[in-house]
Image (cartoon, rainbow, N blue to C red; front, side, top):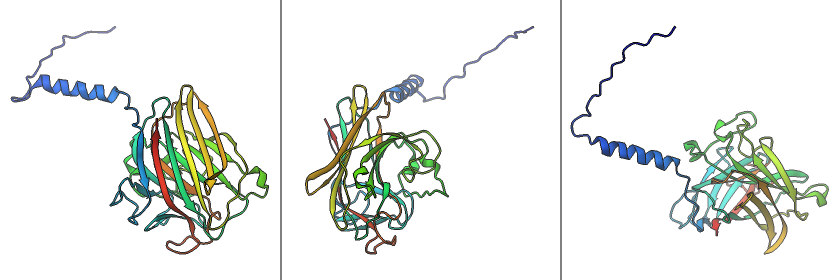
Length: 294
């Protein structure tokens, strides 16, 4: 049996000087704003970093970016005209954060990056150079240096929606070198791109290619919103000639908010050592550009 008792309700007046109607209107407006989908990205340059000021943050250079360590505190070295990903004998990563871009149908987020290889190049390194776009999910920790490894996981990286492309480095079977495309899964690896275990392999292809020592290369990664999902593509060029390119569509994908561009190099891939400001210690980026194409 359920017994109902008399309920009494009293409405206390708002404190003097408070406009209740205005307060309620503000609350309702904030709630409506929260429910409103993000505005489409605006075509144009998001950042265009040539590292001219020798820094790794949004400093004196127009259109430069904030760069952070992803896996180790000594993964970055900077100087006028270059930003180094110090890897050598260690697998390490870096990333740039930017204003999140939500693409309207037909729009493309394109990263173009120019880099120079060191004196030492590893051999038979499968999927060893990785580039990715990810959603930051408004996690404040991503706006700063972080570290992570196979032994020390960082939960900030878990479940970030995004995509990664990777390049093979001088495989024993040279004809097998291709560009692979992967999608970040909602699991708990605790690493951003230091492992492929947290990614679903969507496909791979492109013409075979090789990396040579002390050579300048240009790569691209792009994500495009299409009617049936997201198209992901990547390419590698030397001296203006495209060596390899591959793209595919992740049909039905709802991943469409990107606020982070990341790079990762596996150990024993580029460079002999892993000390900052030492020769032969990793890749040197001279130009990284991010833009939204209509």
